[in-house]
Picture 1 (tube, rainbow, N blue to C red):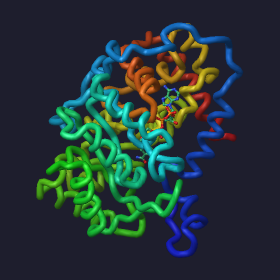
Picture 2 (cartoon, rainbow, N blue to C red):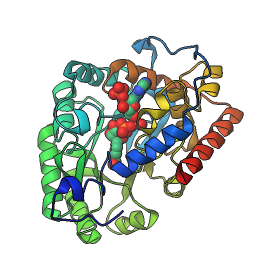
Picture 3 (cartoon, rainbow, N blue to C red):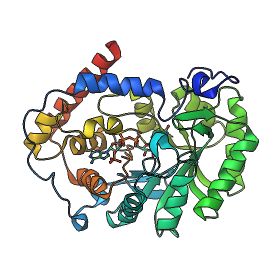
Picture 4 (cartoon, rainbow, N blue to C red):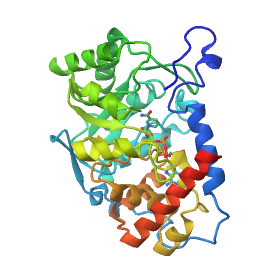
Length: 347
Ligand SMILES: NC(=O)c1ccc[n+]([C@@H]2O[C@H](COP(=O)([O-])OP(=O)(O)OC[C@H]3O[C@@H](n4cnc5c(N)ncnc54)[C@H](OP(=O)(O)O)[C@@H]3O)[C@@H](O)[C@H]2O)c1
């Protein structure tokens, strides 16, 4: 990760450096969209219409035990999209966001990914207001990024701040211990050992049960592993973004949960007419569902967390849990995704 420039106008200096909606990621997604999105090949038929929530079950994706002790269904929910534009403030349609959250347990989802910086605080607050006391749901949150406005994300990894992140997430979520707390970014301006050290301290103190990292290399996972057991790694990964393939393989070998963010390439893969349309149409599913099914089959440690603020989209995504791809379809999608990824890199 590039070293953030501190000082000056963060809108100009830091916008280009870091973040969930990092402009580099946005450029990447635009390149992907330009490369991947073929002209629509005709209407996609099949089960794409109205979804019967009672029939969708995230449990069909199979289960994974985070750090061997927190059992979750492998298809989760990303709660970044229940906020305003630029992941700032309240969502445009608060009721839709609340209905989306209310649908989470009814669809068999028991893993929610959020962060204090989503809103900031809006996502955690909404989760608590709709779902507390959670009843078997694992709410994983993150800290270590501060926000100065829409689409602006700055790493801040001073140990005293990371401790405050955990203490405030505990309060907002209304829990005594956070099941899974993830360092949103390693702050390049603070020694990594100090950041990992305070995480290990907070785990020993019982403030957090398990610990994870986000946007990290294998070397960084191993460095953190000298302080605590790395339970999960959350890197950007999807069918057409394979830059973290080495990290995924490492997690698979080590039994570390791999939580791919932007599993739908921030929506690009969910649109009709994508490169996946042909296979999706043949299977009677949407491109987004096929993309999620591919991810679930890609690795047993894979825990996709597609994000949405709409209950119908949530139900469509959960329908992917029960979709099994033949080896030939899996390979065809894999090849298509790699092709799109290398074309995007070259663009
Ligand atoms: N660790 C990190 O740095 C990091 C960074 C980014 C995200 N995350 C986490 O990863 C989660 C997933 O990433 P993401 O939300 O950025 O990207 P994503 O899951 O790839 O895509 C989300 C986008 O796709 C759209 N979408 C979802 N389901 C759809 C459907 N069935 N049909 C049509 N459109 C659909 C959503 O719009 P609608 O709301 O209109 O459905 C939203 O714009 C986030 O929610 C967050 O929890 C982590």
